[in-house]
Image: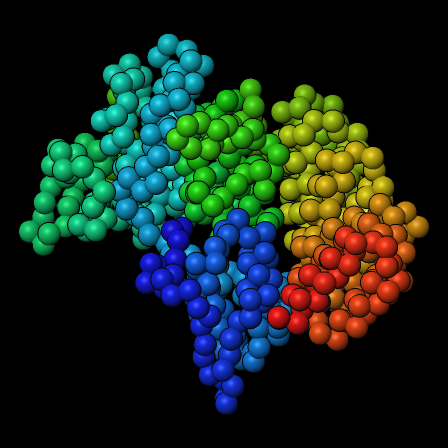
Amino acid sequence: MIPPAVGDSMQNQAAQRKIGDQELQIADSEFERFRDFFYRKTGIYFEDSKRYFVDKRIIQRIQETDHHSFRSYFTYMRFQASGEELQVLINLMTVNETYFFRESYQFDCLVGPVLDEVCKNKRAGEPIRIWSMPSSTGEEPYSIALYLLERWAGINDVDIELMASDIDSRVLRCCRDAIYSPRSVKNLPADILKKYFLLLPNGDYQLCRDLRDSVEFSQVNLVDSNDTRAFRNIDVIFCRNLLIYFDDASRRMAAEVFYDALNPGGFIFLGHSESMSRITSLFNVRKFNDAITYQKPF
Amino acid sequence: MGLKKKITSNVESINAESINVKNLEEQRKHSRDYDGLLNLLHEGDPSERRWAARDLAEFPQAIDSLCQRLTQEGDLIVREAIFDSLLQISQANDASARNIILELIPLLRSEDTPLRNGVIEVLQNLPNSVAPHMEKLLQDKDSDVRIFAIDILRELAHPDTPAWLLDVINRETHINVLANAVDRLAEVGTEDMVSELQKIKIRFPREPYLSFAVDTAIRRIEGI
């Protein structure tokens, strides 16, 4: 999840649209009411500068759900037992985008203090296991692989098993092909791009075979225990910007899955707006210089 | 040393069964019967109790035992698993959800705060099943239970929530309970409740926090 588009947020004014003869506007207090509720449900807090972005999408949903005021729409959304409308809003308010080295401060944290701690608790010859979930089209697990190879001195001393999973079989096929647009690799340093990618005739980039073979991809539904039961003895989990799309019960189940999958002392990285503390007290918060992580107690 | 290579590379075979996670297969047994799980829930070590609690999610008849275990269980990881299993069982059918509610509501009187908070979280996720109990909870003789009932309403997706809260502010005399209800109405109140909110300031003229909460709620409700 990334913040609203810049173009939208530049205009700090309420959005307006016409319903019949009336201009539909979101009042300041209505915006605050929505902001508090949305923050409580998702952990995403909209600054005043995002007002136009938020108003515009709320008004869009008011119209699309045939309501005529913020009040009636908010009541509908707030008390809908299925939570479907809240989910629609979450999708509208978040912009899913994945690319290499996205939120790279977390990878810095991984190859710094996190793996240092993990290694301290390993016996000689014991591999380190890292699980990326959801893998989406592969940018995250391959970014981890690149970081390990290029920025972690310990890579020559330890075996690393990289696993990545997603519920969507289509994106898993993309992972295996590992062909990416220039936009997707825009954050990669030129030397890394040159070293590990092949420039294709159409301008896309394909990751080299060796790296493609270094990640084990699998189709997994995180809330299906049959899918997740086999994931054990993991040292680090990346689960960024997924739990935000789950309802409360599913979020708790996912936290249980991670708890069971991790070794004692293992770490979880979540998306920047997500907090494990809001879901469960099973994990300890660990604050490092680069990032906040959640650790399974020893 | 370095990045280990995977064993399979056939894209058609991507699924949880075909991948390397077989190498991670845990030691535990998968097929355990109901009675065996109940024994483990009460007698195993924390890890065994936790796994028993998780696997009992497949047995709706385990509601009583899971809830009973909650009151005895001191280990957080087991409790969390019990709460999650209860949530899963509650999704099986309405009767299960109703049974869970009946078992959990008495635990709102527990002095064990983490236990109580876990109970509140489960109840918040069962709006239709908890609804028939809300009025009684909101009129409980124990003011703490009334506050916990309002905590349930904080996340309850039930359309009667504003009406329940209105009823609270009209008759409640305990300042803390009242303040909690007013706070909730700031989010879910409607314009027809403004006059009732105003009356609180007249009833409690020497409670500045309450006046502030009422003014905030009214401002939110009226969209000023």
